[in-house]
Amino acid sequence: MSPRRRRIVAALAGAVLGVVVAVALSGCNPLPAGPPSTETTLAVLRPTTPTAATTGTSGRPPATTTTPTVCDATLWQHVYHPARLKIIRPCLTVTGTITHIAREADGDTHIRLAPDPADRWTLQPANVTGQHGDLVLEPVCERPPTQADAKPACAGYRSPVVVPPVGAHVQVSGSYVYDLGHGRWAEIHPVTSIEARP
Image (cartoon, rainbow, N blue to C red; front, top):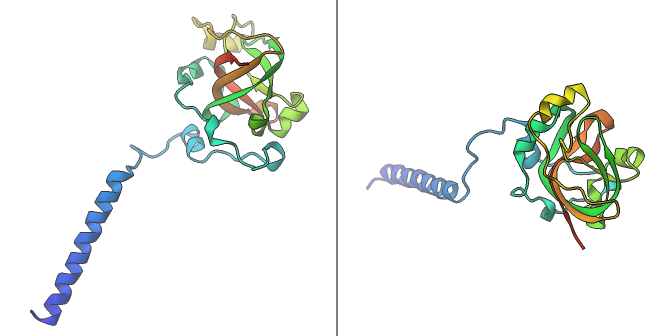
């Protein structure tokens, strides 16, 4: 075989090997079905990192608090004006102690939660200045709203979430969001579940 033919055969063999490797790797690490199309999807892929002032010693939120299987995404159809909330994590579970409960005109219950130390990274500066340093929790449509623009979102729906009393230590799951209308304080809104914990 001539040197020129040997070079051609070697080049073809290298190209075939590259294709085989690429196919093998794609089988082990499949790509998503389609490109991300919403801010929610992008937030999952690139979650916002809280500032150093609101995080623990590591400066990063613990990955173990994200539990995507426990949140009910259909609750978003009962959030009035959902564009006022920026989704940071579609589902998050945190623990802490309830410090305050208020009934709102929009039918939601506004709860303040003092997060346990491991979950204090969830707090933003506006939580300190506007919510006494607490995380806001909002189970939606806890009662019929009296606020006119909130009535359509709650039509035919009442939340099954039972809110424990002030002082209860609880575990809460729901969407972790920033409320854009209130200085971007952080909330779990809508809340999927609240469970008492020792």
